Image (cartoon, rainbow, N blue to C red; front, top):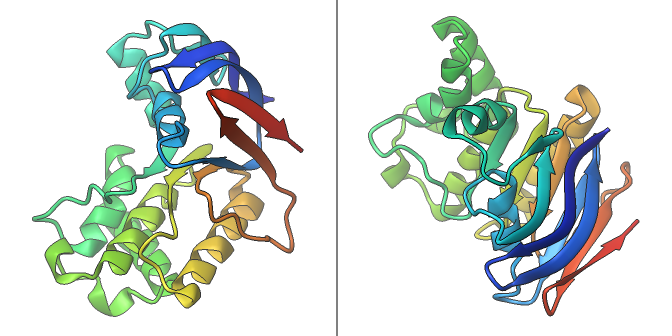
Length: 217
């Protein structure tokens, strides 16, 4: 099943005539030189940046000219972790992690259990009642990533997920993504130039070079 499909896609002058497919359960790494367009391409996948030309489909739905209602419905099927975190400043860490479940209408007890379980996994359970300003950059990054995963989305988009992280914390993130792929079959797209070796999973890659997309695997 195709989750993302691009045909002759052009975006913001940095992606030019790209053709590629991302399939269900893929773990795909998107890389490029600095300013080479990987973040722009990632933003286009969740409708934040509109294509200038060509075709871009998400879950077999055309994103070119999509209305806000349909886009919101598609985004509910995604989990997104931004490089700049986008945590809600006056919410606790636990509540920030719970946000996708709250939007989905899950009970407060369910939201709390799910959030605390993932916080424990990334060694942040003692900080469940802290606020974002009380966290380090690496801790904010881990909170943003588990918030993207907490509702078991079909598609996970991550922008530089291991920036700000030490080696130990980065390893936890990659283990978490492996678990997400195995446990609920998520398609995972990671924009990064620091591509790890995931021992237990097959990965693919897209590389942007001078606006062209080279698909490997």
